[in-house]
Each structure stands twice: as C-alpha cells, then as structure tokens.
Image (tube, rainbow, N blue to C red; front, side, top):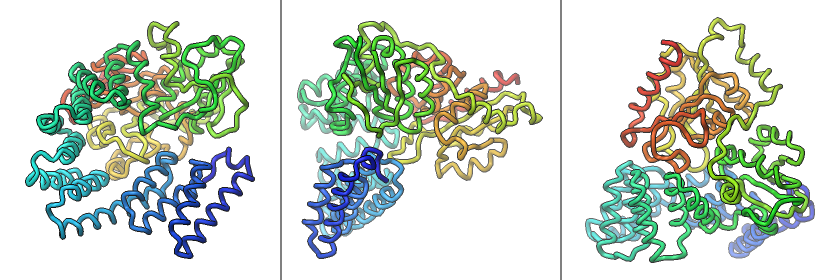
Length: 532
C-alpha cells in the first residue's frame, strides 16, 4: 500500500526501500537497535510509508514490548483504518500483553499500576466488566488511587453508567481539587448526560488550572455548538489542531492558512477534508460560497467521495481532487471544518438549503435498472433505505450504532426495505439473514456516488448517526435520524428537525441506551407514512 505522492517520486521510494532493507538485515543479524533506527529514519522521511510503520510495530511485538507495539499498530490504523494486517496484529499484541500482565499480577497481586495496566488492556479488548473488576481490586486496597478512579470512570462511561462515573471523578477531586484532568473528564460525562451548562463550568475550571488544554477547549466548542452558540463554538473548535489526535495532521503546513482574511479575490485556495466522510459531506455546503470570491478553488477529498463531490465542478473555478494527488502551489489552504469560522463575517446562520449534492445521471439510470423500477410487482410501494451502523474498521462507536435486532418492529411494515449498509457489523449477520424482505447491495455501493444514486430512488432514509444521514440530507431526501441520548454537537439537544438539513427529522433516545423505544416510535411513524 503506497500513496500516490510516493509512487510519483521513484528516487524517494528507492531511499525508503533501502532503509527498510537495512532494517530487515540488521534484525536478522540480531542488531535490533540498528533495525529500529533505520525504520525510525524511514518514518521520519515519510510518515505514511506503510511498510516501515508495520515493520516497526512487528519489531516491537517480537521484542515483547507489547504496549509500544499496540501504540504502533494504532498509528498504522489511524492512517489506514482498513489495514486488516494491522488490526489482526494489534489484537494479538493485546492478548499477549494481557497474558504478560496476568502473570505479573500472580507474582505481585498488590501492584496497583499493573492492575491499572490490566484494566486498560481489557478496555481495549472491550471486556468492560473485567476491566471494572480489575480496577475494583486496586480500590479495595488503595481507595483513593487516582489513576484507578479515573479509569473506572471511563469504563463506567462505556457501560452507560454515567452517574456512577461522575462519582469516580468526584472521589478524585475530594483528594485533589486542582486535578484538571479529573475535572475535564467529569465535564465529559456531564456533556453526555446533556447537562451542558455544568459541563461548560467543568471545562472552564480545567482551563483555569491548565491553560494549555486543547482537549478542554474542543469539548467547550462542542457544548457551545450544541447550544447554538456558533460565534464561541467555531472559534474554540480550532483548538482541535493542538490535540494529540490531530496535532501535525494538517495536510498543507507549508501553505498559508486562511480563516477569513485576507480577501480571496484573484487568489487560489485549497480546501481539504480533514476527518470522516460524514463531516466532509456536511461541510461541503460551504464550497460554493468560497467559489464566489476566490479565483481558483481546489478541493481535496477521500477517494470514496471524489465522484460524489465532482458535481461541484459545474462551478467554473472549482476542481475536485483525491487527497494524495500532487498539487500545484496555492495562495492559501483551509480545512473544510474551519469554513464556518472563516465565513462568519458574512454568514449569520448555517446555509441549510438542500439539495446541494446530486447523483450522477448514469448512476441513477443504473440503479433504476438494479431496483427494477416499473418491473417488480411492488415497485410502486414506499421505498425505505436503512443504515444502522457506521464503519466497521478502527475504533467502533457502540453507543452510536444500533444492533439490528432492536429495529425488528420495522421488519414487518409493508414497505420495500433496502439496506444502505456497505459494512454489515459481524454481530448483525445472523439477524440480517432473518430480514428476508430486506434487499442488500453491499458490493454495488462501491463509493458514495453509488450510494447517492441509490438513495435518490428511495422515498425515505432511516439511519443511525452515520455518513448516510449526511448524504441523505445533502441530497434533500426525507430522512429520519435515530440518535442516542447523548447527542453529538451537530444535532443539538432536542428531538425534532435538524438545523443542518431541513429534510432530516431527529428521533432521540428518551432513556440512555434504550433503542427499543426509538424503534417503536419510528415504526409507528413509518406505518403512517406508508399509508397504513
């Protein structure tokens, strides 16, 4: 797996391969330090060189430096979430590290730090009840152990036991009132409980104690945006580039950044997708506004969105390119999610007109044939597309995704059900087999342009908080969003219409973790929409 820029520079590739070969030779000769040094040099020259990233992780694993190996595989997966080899090796490293930790605890059962490490490994493996048990072992002989209390709060959050999580952070603060991290974590739980003003107070206190705390600024921005305070929210949202997750990840660090000034008249600008597919679709609405003032606009997007967003090339000064292509110099750059701040001088509200994306004519015709419109006996029936989970690579979002079994009340309503899941969660395979009337097209939805064409033939989309709901909203398609209790900032905090997409209606959990209630409400509305 080599990115396009590397393939266009054979000399650079040759240098990287030489370092990789040096590392392998040194490793065979038992010179592990030299082997690692060659890999580190290769990664410094090109942080996205997958063979060196994987080789470094594998070398750490072979040296039984399991925690470092896990972090190295995480680095691979941050850059390449679909890299199956990295996922499998990471899982093996976790199991080996857990075995190592268990053996250490047999010899030193009162080692609090080792128990905390064990709990962290169990959490990575999503064994949350076991992690909780490990942390409780620590707290039995060290009741005020701050790391154990902090981890316990995080595990309880995974288990949807928010009130108990708050108590963990309160116990830390009872012994150390100036613990900025504990105050921040307490705020995160309160935000998930929709206690936004209390959460904001926590973040303010954390920043008072630790002014250089970009994660707290980011959390502040999410609360403010959720409340509709865009002036304060977008400004604080820029702190994301100082967080460990995104620091150093800007695509064009050598090009001047643009946040509204100076004027773009007669100048060129690079806009680029910084995070997920849904984020890119949501903020693509701002591209025409930039095109109104700039002489040239180039938009860098993931390959999965290239064809979909190519519709913006109808604007005479806009070009859409895949992220890894070599680009001519531009006057400025701006990530898509910074555009609301950059345009705040001319926008009082969110530009929410839809559709602002459209499916390709050829794809529309192809999907009409696939669906058999006008040919099948039930082709005139109400057509409903369903997506219940996000991507199934990298970190999974269990509170956002909906186990398909909870949506069973929709299965028997007399409508044409069509799956919009490109990646079906492993745990839903057996359940999906029982939805015999659900039509499936995983292989045919090769990119978001194909998914857009399929959605364009539907009457309604029902989806969890995934890229599909953004796509439906951008296409102006009626859509129902099934949302967890602890909303993400973009959806506000109430049930009802979305301020981002006029055709999207929000169905929110009334009780944390309760998808059954949401499913029953949606089923009743679907019966009415389908005429019975």
